[in-house]
Length: 140
Image 1 (cartoon, one colour):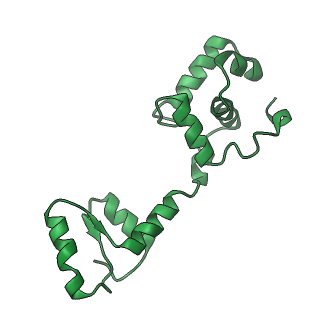
Image 2 (cartoon, helix red, strand yellow; image 1 turned 90 degrees about the horizontal axis):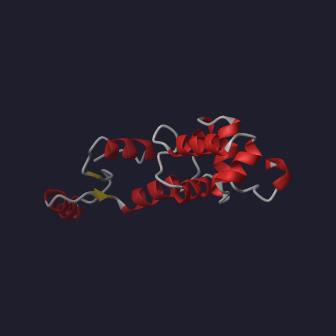
Image 3 (cartoon, helix red, strand yellow; image 1 turned 30 degrees about the vertical axis):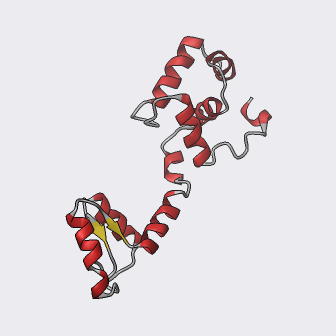
């Protein structure tokens, strides 16, 4: 239980292994159900707090972009646009073999942490990397 409605504190507590997060403003008679739920091995989060945490998790994370160089972002956009390795190689002026290695490195745990191009494209969309994709000349 917490006397604060801080989203950061709630998220940190849940990441640290808390089985629930409820405000101290909860009525005492309303605590029995959540406590039984936790005792049964489930987690409990106040509905308003959960809504706020979920809304925050849907926001694009700008810091992810900062981890990538301009050429890596360009490569990620090409992958997200569905370009084949040969097309990527041509646009990035590298061999197909090098382009294939670059894509594999991009998808690795060290970078995106996804297992395939579709997941990379989904993440790019979520982070709004494709918002200006129709500005084709910019990526040529």
